[in-house]
Image 1 (tube, rainbow, N blue to C red):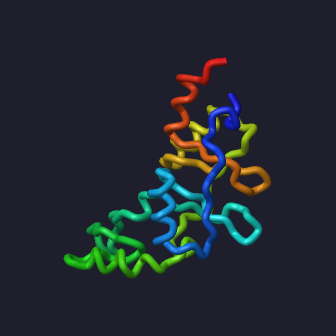
Image 2: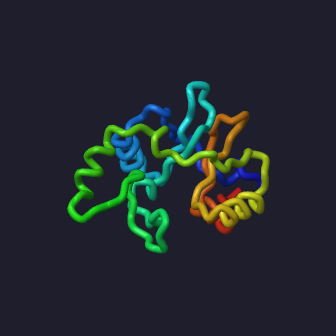
Image 3: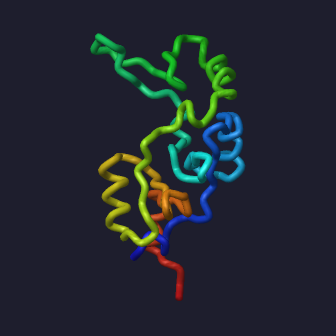
Length: 150
């Protein structure tokens, strides 16, 4: 089965200069888990997922210890609300992940599954000439099990 047969589309995208506050609002209003970030030509330049709004453990330089980071800054006790307040004005370009792993519409389900596993990700943008036309998520794989009736 080709990706175009089970991907989610149309895809919601954001521009590189979109603020994180606007992105959070978009994710909540559309009940989606990610947005591809596009450049001025409409081509994928990055991706932001809901996990980018949560803390991640990072290794402390020159140490064996790990500590939480949020929006690229080390978290301290009592600073979380202030960090979110400051981050509202940050842009997609500042926190997006890039380069982005992508698929094309004519690739197969097996290739999608391999990419999700290899990169330990939950979603992959589907592009046509670099422009996003859909998203394949782990949730979309359910369509392989329960296809639409003919």
